[in-house]
Amino acid sequence: MDELVSTLSKRFPALKFTAGNQFCWSPETGEIFYKSEANSRQATWSLLHETGHALLEHSGYRADFELIKLEMAAWERARQLAAGLEITIDEGHIQDCLDTYRDWLYKRSICPNCTAKSLQQGDFVHYRCFNCHTVWRVTASRFCRAYRRHAGVPQPGTLSM
Ligand SMILES: [Zn+2]
Ligand SMILES: [Zn+2]
Image 1: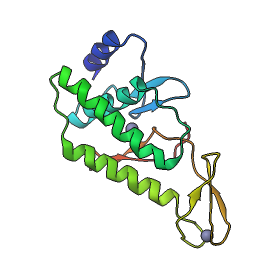
Image 2: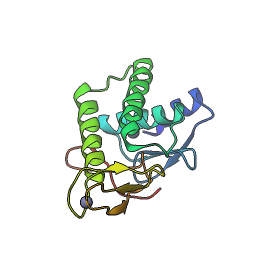
Image 3: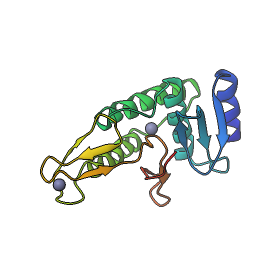
Image 4: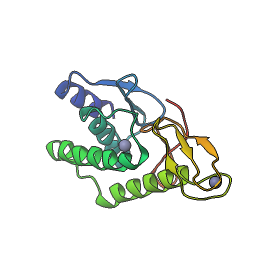
């Protein structure tokens, strides 16, 4: 992992890589967090994916419906990076990650009171139910996610950045 981090920092000196306990891009601090002890293929792909977010300068404040597009764009950028490094990212892994992300976005939009699917408010941190008018808050954390250990698939978490 450290080798890939040093390769990427040489190629993109403007990027800031910080060892942490998960892989994520933090738009607030402009840092790419990575698990330095992780060396699996999935870990490598995650690092490239988060680097993709950073290179595309994805910000944390977007409507949920736009986020899946950003996720896809970050994977596309990761594919380009991987090609230059002679790494192949498994397409099934990318689809699993996107599906997990879609599920997470879907769950956020379900009213906790009456389970109607609802629309996000303009401030991007609240949803309001059109049916029962319940308002609930969702985390503004977009790209920082906890990882499910057994499957190796990123599991969107509810951590605040
Ligand atoms: Zn992402
Ligand atoms: Zn409701």
